[in-house]
Length: 204
Image (cartoon, rainbow, N blue to C red; front, side, top):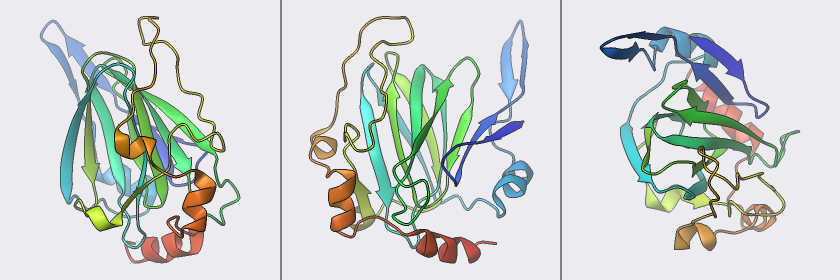
């Protein structure tokens, strides 16, 4: 596995080694020892999620209240998505900054987003399938969002799919109604670096 640190602290790109022959492909998309060496603690699996999205669908920017937050280990075994990590920690030097990883069924990369990092993606193919390993179960009262089209964050979303065909963003009603980054901050929804680091220290 190759690991690359992203521009958003607490987010990493992981590229697995693939073994292919006439039968197909085999790869290890999660290795506990590699994860622990990279992140500094073991991954606690609480739930495994799967989403299937039409081309152009955007999901996010989602995050959970810290503590405990929700860490995500994400891959795309079918199709392609542009996955985005957003720094939503209000006192972070990179607050509002984002970075991307292309997850697809070619390179089969993974993105890991620690607690306190916002997550979003855009599907670039029909029926893009995304698998998430998450550290905490779904808790509606702790789930929050920032509008993925928020001009303050200004994510450079693709305008064409992976075949070069035009696509337009498709959002859920919930994501359309999500506040801007500034509004989410004013509402007290966003975590602080101190709160995140305090919680992460309990995982080491």
